Structure formats: C-alpha cells, structure tokens
Image 1: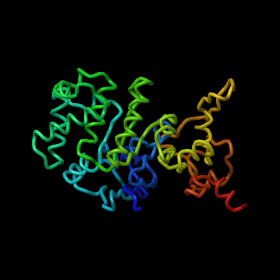
Image 2: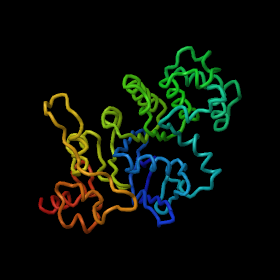
Image 3: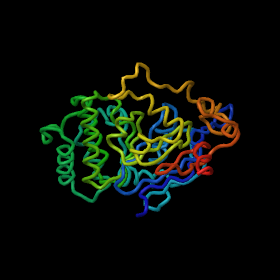
Image 4: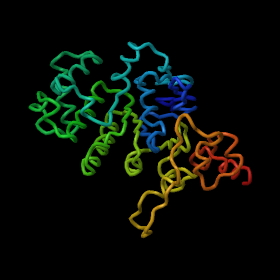
Length: 325
C-alpha cells in the first residue's frame, strides 16, 4: 500500500545574523493510510517543527531548505500559500497543544465549525450545522444542540480540546497532525482525549502524526514511533519494539528514565547532559557527548539509519553489530 504521507530528507533552517541554524537535518519517514505514528523526543528535538513544516505553518524566518513532503503522492512543501491553505483543513487537519489558542474567542463554537465545513465541503448552511452538531456529539460533548451556540470560554479545557478535535475532523481530512494534544489537560482527561482520538480516526479512516514527549501516550496510542534527537531521527519502528527492545542508546536512556510499576529501584536511569543548541550541534552523531557507549567513529561521522531488527536506528553500534553477525 502506498504511504499517505512521505517526508523525504527534510531540512528546516532559521537564518540569523550570526549564521544559519539547522533545526531539522535530513528527516525521513512515512505514514501509511490509517496509521498512527508517534513522534517523541526532548524539548528542542524538532517534533513540533516537523508538524509545522508538514501543515505549512512554519514561523518566519524558518524555511524548508531541502527535501520533499508528499501527500498521497503530491508534493505539498513548495505550494503557494493559497493552495496550501486549501489543503490545510480539507486534507490535513491540525490539533494544537492549547485549545484556547486554536479557537476564536469572539465566535461561537458552531460558527467556527460551520465555517470550516462550508469552506471545504459542498454542503448547505443547514447541512453544515447538522454536521457540526454530529461532530460535537461524536467527540462526547453533551447537549450538543444547545452548546453549539456557546463561546469557547464557556467550555472547560477538556471540552475545548474535544471541540478542537471536532474542528480538525470537520472536513474529513486524510491526515491529522496532533501537536501535544493532551499536555494542557488533567491526567484523567488525557486518557479520554487519547481514546477519543484513536476511535474517531479509526471511524473516519484518518492517519495521525502524534507529536508528544509522553511515552505513556505513545505506548497507548501509536502503531509506530519515531524518536527525534537534535533535529534528526535517532530510531524509528513498531511501538512495541522501540519501547521494549530499543537499539539506540538515546532511546534506551529515554525508556530507562520511565518509572516501572514492577521495578522497585530507588533511582531511575538518567541521560547526563542536555540537548545541544542549534548553533553548537557536535560533529558526527549529535548524541555522542551524552552517549555512554561512544567511540571514535561516533565523533567523526554521522550515522545513517541502519536496520536493527524490526526497527531502524542511527547508531554506529548497530552498524557494527550488523557487520559482526
């Protein structure tokens, strides 16, 4: 089956007075129809930037400096603003971290939903309103017929995020880019939103790129996961394999830092150091200053993604293991 989304060797730059900063460096991945791909990593790894590049909402002076983004085989990274605007909403939906910033406080929920539907679908105003009510019902908002005429401030945080999900699904897009959709919510509400997102995307046949730093959300939701580090893919593969049998030292560190219910260790594993700044990314493997298994080649040459069983990892240790086996 052909991928729904293909990201090929994507590079994103930020020109500054002190030189050009490379924020995303040669990132490649696919998302299959109906698949949920998790994108995980520390703050500053490039997760949200990848999502912004895909939906065409990079903040200036950020720009795509290389590579391609293809949606259903059509290249979309070089489209004029108006053409990309037509794709955004109709073929790609977006769910952002803070629902308050996604909704216009001056318009009712119903107006925002019906405007989106009327912009992208050939329906009448009445059909759009009925569709909006159905979407609110599907996302678990009680008394949708009455609440559709209320304003965003009249909804709780969890309910606002449900409205944002309804908004993202309004024009039946093929791909949803969800950027930290549960970060601003209580833990009990997070679980509801995640299961809702999974169910609705399955019912609507949409694929999802789920950006998060929460491995619990990834484990619960995703089919595959891409681990980003310093604007590069460190490891990518089926979610169970990446979580339980990670190949990249960075992924191992991430997994080791998560508390386990079965483990009675007093101290969690930790990754020493911090993510490098964009103006100071080390030569070779970007993780080498923090890696407990670093050797000379890591400091000299940048590794590609090598096959590591069911996953792929950008690590010279994996390449060595392949050679010796």
